[in-house]
Image (cartoon, chains in turn orange, red):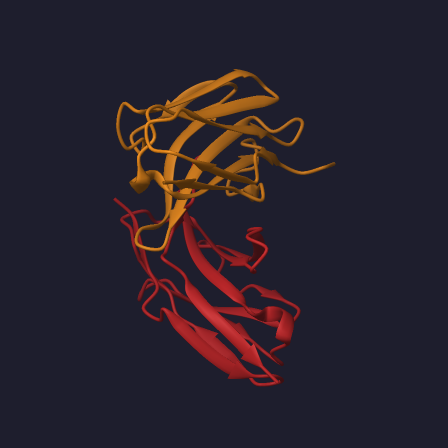
Length: 115
Length: 115
């Protein structure tokens, strides 16, 4: 399996622009997670899905952030409008939820820089 | 709410030496899972070792072992015979025992291994 695939790997944009990050989870995994990593706050959970349904979005910073999972093989995290404080590495991870305590498999992350 | 604390932001060690990374956590759960993830400069998050709280025996994976002290809520990682490739940021993480729950991470410890 190719693992969790994220795109783009790097994104540089200007304040106010819309940003869309993409994720393809491991085939057969039924849970998908979006994390954000910054130096100040470490790894924070933004939102996660089970069988394409959002389960917990309490970590989403504000209304500028939205996430969708239209099918089992694709998810997006959108920021509109973007701000410099959104600069971070955004990770997508997936897991097979039937295995309690199972491992989360992470993508390589998308590094976002908002100027 | 669960919290994970890593009190050592940075550590350094010479090749072939042993190093221990500290982690404490706070939870009211009796059963749960603990993890150590490694993040090398490539950004890829890699599972190092996993411990189930109901198991008294400490987990071991080759040169990596843990010292799990449930009463003290402590979960340290010992790396024996350190190698240059161990240079990375190490994250301690907590997971509740329900299927498909998210990982809660500590802020990480940056480990540098030098020759």
